[in-house]
Length: 238
Image (cartoon, rainbow, N blue to C red; front, side):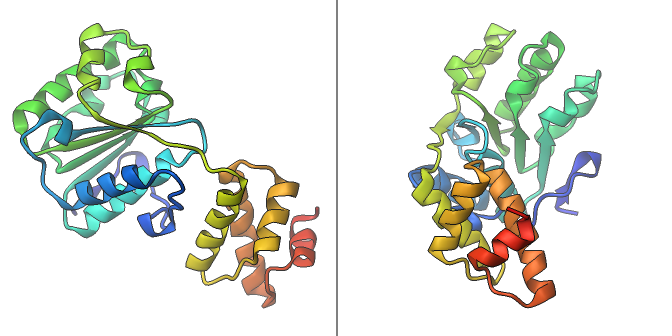
């Protein structure tokens, strides 16, 4: 199988480049789109990518989209969610053989950078990838590599080799457009006034808003109803 996922991880089928509202992040999206389709180049900055941003800014969505696009291009890919894997004591066992994939994506790499064992093994992996010259590696984190606390100084210097993008969170107008984009991908029509109503009544966290949109999608199909403000109020009890 070209795609291998540890821990029975199932990537969301709706987190694609086509469902990511770019806002001010077009440069990062373009880079990742091209990277998913090409082979690794000769330079270090061509092989390592660092995507940073606050919670719910779209880091994981872009990582999942990159994996999906690379998998579609018949590349051998691996996804490592470090928030989940950090509980495993044997970091060497987790990272063994990871340099044999075409694309390695690490979500929340900063979850383990305060641990010496993980830092040592990650440092060794990056050196293997550098020697291999055929692997691309994408990492997500809350902050830029230079601002991230790393227990092993040599690892921090390696991480700063990366081509880096800081995601700009969407404003309210763009969040409404992002909701409409995702709804359209699901075959739903989400009017602008309904999207704005959801923002005002359900908060600004995109992960929560998309979870509510999934509920509305299910209810809309079951009841054959359009997405209107009264329907949203009734379905979500608000």
